[in-house]
Amino acid sequence: MSKMDFSSVKLERNRNHYGTRSPLSVPTGSFSARRSSLVAAAAVCAMLRLLKSILTQQLSSPSASTIPPSFSLRLLSTAAPPVLADPVAGGFAVQDYLVATCGLTRARALKASTRLSHLNSPTKPDAVLAFLAGLGFSRADVAAAVARNPSLLCAKVEGTLSPIVAGLTSLGLSHSEIARLASLTDYCLRTKSVVAKLRYYHHLFGSSDKLLRVLKVSPRLLSSSVGTVVEPNVAFLRECGVDVRHIASLCVNAPRLLTTNPERVRAMAACAEAVGVPRGSGMFREALQAVAFLSEEEIAAKLDYLKNTFRWSDAEVRIALSRYPSLLRRSKGMLLRKSEFLISKVGLEPAYIARLPVILCLSLEGRLRPRYDVIMFLMANGLLKRVPKYYPIFKATEKVFFEVYICPHKEAAPHLAEYYATACRGEVPTGSTLTGTKNGL
Image 1: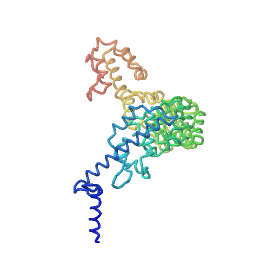
Image 2: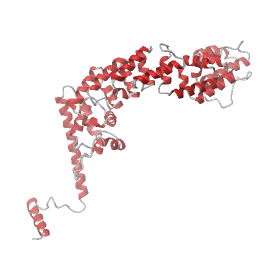
Image 3: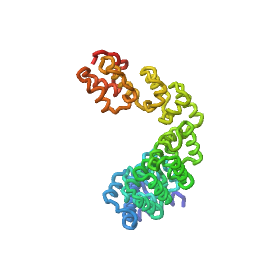
Image 4: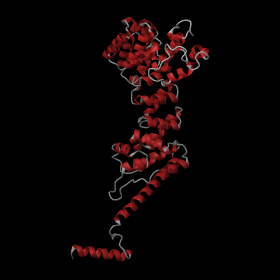
């Protein structure tokens, strides 16, 4: 019997067994529809598996919180039906799972899938999502955590995640804070050792809020060695007079400081002293931030620029930096504009500015220039008996400046307040000024 004859006999037997149409006899053009049906069936099965995992987790895990039923249903209903497997190829479609079930964008799913290529079924991911649902993670929380750490979907719930969450909860972190932490760093739910590190940082920074704020800008804290890197740096900073309550703000402004090699941190401290700020000074913390991660050549170039721009001597540069170390971080353009205004226009002496360098941190267009124009207007119109000192004028609060220099002259200059407010907002047309105007307002 030929091969074709054998197929015909087999087909006829199938017809006799199944009735009018063999299941192997597929009409032309129906393959696509059949494939779609199988994909839909796979999606339904996936959602049922996830629901089963959620219920199992809720009933069997003593460490997991009670799963809000509304959240579980929302997790299943709001997501688009996931295409978990290609029923023809028989493989687990990781990217589709990440998009449809975890809420990642297609671009992020593509990137994350490279770390999940070994997954061949949704069993572990389903269990992890069920656990996160029990903690109250929103769909956005899940997406952020998985995007940050795709390997989270492969974690063991009872062996890894549950003990970590229990440890974090014992530190006083709420489930919402744990969700935020998981979105900030991929180390949060990776290993049990993270609990000990977070216990140390929680004690160091004093509150969960400060801890999360620091980790947002310096997530490397959780991957750095506490014993050999962080603790020695903290001890050294305290030796330098940096109060422990200021270390958190230091980390926010110089995120890598605590995770840098201790020898390099000591070298930074030496640079801070070299520019005129001794250890134990109230400005040492600010000076350390200013020189952090700058080379000696970069610092020397900045010192030369300050000398040339403000016509300072070496001693005057040291005086200015000892009182306002952040000058080293200011842009050249900003420093040049303020130098031209304060020295060339206002007429302040370089030595005066060196002794009161905080003037240089004030906004030129939002404070210095508008207040100078007001004073010049009052002088030109005989409303001030003598020229006041400019430092108190520039440093005064808005309330004090109004009470002393604007309110007493409402009758003589009724529009002065309006002009000043407009000038501070930067809305005065270029070239417009009060200076020298007589009875103009």
